[in-house]
View 1 (cartoon, rainbow, N blue to C red):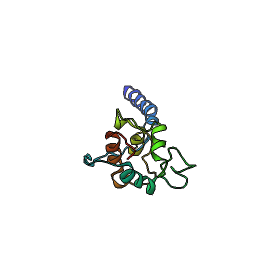
View 2 (cartoon, rainbow, N blue to C red):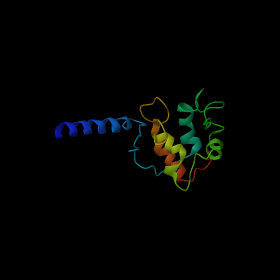
View 3 (cartoon, one colour):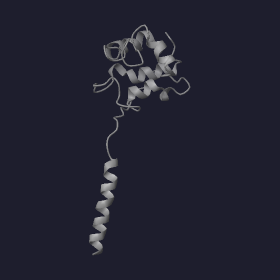
View 4 (spheres, one colour):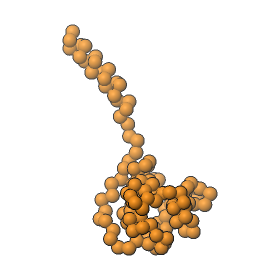
Length: 131
């Protein structure tokens, strides 16, 4: 009798806990080496945004914010408060790219292109200049 009660209690506990176990997001670990070279927004970051993010229906003019098109990326990131220079790894842009805020960007990519995570973190760490 005690065995049946114990099994029933265990099953009830599993049924209560199991619904809470589900995948919310995939976090991509940035295992790439830290970037120590000077990172330029216009030469390093924006070309990757243009190819992978600032596409029609995504992060382009009239699409989702922030607008990451060539002429608007910097102002959109700064004015939208996607950059935190005092804590670069907590910048909303970096959290989105790494999947710590939601599904990692760009959507549908098996991994982020051209070390965008490391480049973005380096750019923010270096002051997120409009260079």
